[in-house]
Image 1 (cartoon, each protein chain N blue to C red):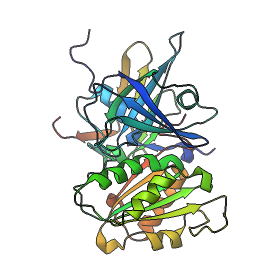
Image 2 (image 1 turned 45 degrees about the vertical axis):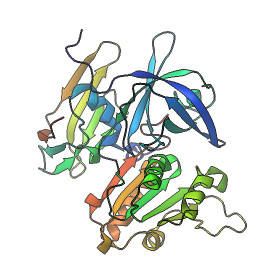
Image 3 (image 1 turned 90 degrees about the horizontal axis):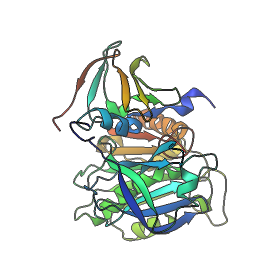
Length: 252
Length: 91
């Protein structure tokens, strides 16, 4: 018997809603009766236990803002993953999954931070950044915000309609999309990998000392962070979350 | 796939550190015993492909910590040789 419980205890969350975001990505809304509340940018660990006792654990960013009733995760299905094919494909409303959280205190943003906000997302790296934008949308005073979001193709853009709605609120949010593998007819966004010219056009001038969050696959995050330092951003302004070669934090 | 593509950051071990320490550790500051750089734990380099977790200094790439958790037995090995000091806020 332990003398004290772990800081973050495992608990069961019940799936109450399932939303298909793209062909490979779904949002899972969990009812977490013991949830202590969270900050935008934090994540949870999900643990699956097989009948023989084998356990697999993966981290997933929280997509819902602190104000939301349910805890939402947005998960990309990785075909060779141990956890994501179960979460996106097999899990049904009413099923229960073991989760612990919220986890992390470094990669978080509070709406009270009035520095200009720069968010840079590669693929499903948009998930914790969406929690920040949803949190910002509920705040009485909104820091000006810019999102640079790189996706493979139009159909791969997660939260596309919701992002359009947030922009149309005209409250100081500006969004730039780039597509790396497709150039749809009538597309007005970028159609290339993130580069110095793109970052220079989207990022705040360094004199505005922005708060910066970069999230995505490791090579994307490294590139984006290097480009921002190239604009003479102080590395301490830039917070990063690397997902590894692919997938969510830690992969799978 | 290159090793550099597998690099994660301190955010990835926030849960693991939460099993060991009584306070949130990604906002703690660690001093590298090798080069003396002070980095927030959320900013360190993390590799999880080894049998244990290897944490490296983002400034000099020397090993800061090695953490091994034995599944199912509730036993941990925590090697902090590479960390001269950890500074963190009261929980």
